[in-house]
Image 1 (tube, rainbow, N blue to C red):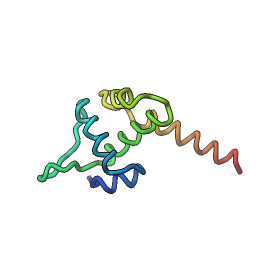
Image 2: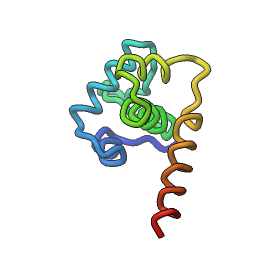
Image 3: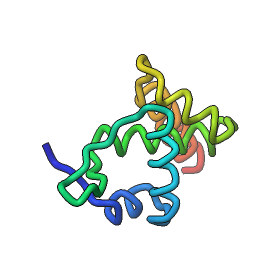
Length: 99
């Protein structure tokens, strides 16, 4: 399994590394677990990146507070695709309409 470092994930999500660190800490306080290396640095899996992306989508596109977005993605039955797929579809429709 491939793991990403903080800088890579921040670039993927278009956020600062400080914001990524803050969001990750908040998720951990809500019970989410990230893999850590021997230096106790977070290593992000592809699933972690999808969860963070879904959290940001809930906050930025669905109007949830950060606290509510974190609670939602931290729940055991949450699937990132339930949030990310509809956004991708709307973006695709918007691009098609603008052609």
